Image (tube, rainbow, N blue to C red; front, top):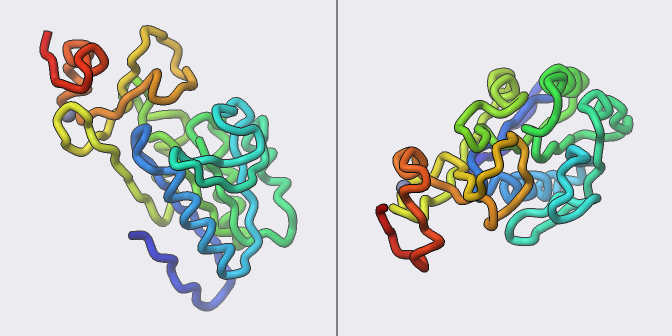
Length: 203
Ligand code: ZN
């Protein structure tokens, strides 16, 4: 489990990335870390992209319905308007932000802020997603979390899209995606979980 580093000497910020597939517990882990900063009486603010309104417009909500208030922003440079007394910035669904986000996070960290980012590492095609690769490169700490593949019980690393839509961004939950391990992901629609009431079926 991630434990906060002790800060010594000059007041310095840093960048943490929490990443993995859908249903891997990224937002739960983000909320866990942010709640600990609240216990430590730190001032925090949470941002998310304005296009993520699956659960709530003004909250970061995990799959287990844990939630914290959040601010919606249209572009990543809007995050630079962070209030002066803030010690901790949380960013959820970071994969949907533009490519300025790594620069923005560097600036925040340099100004002494702890930046905690959660986002998908790969899109539904298994491709690195938006600014996430660059964020993982510049972060001091990267945590990969995993879901469980419902077909074989191994660790799931991929987000398999159940619908036929082909756009990179299709918002949805268990109706549209399921977590899969590398092997089951590559079997594609040969594995149809829904049609068999949970029993593995090979076409
Ligand atoms: Zn599997």
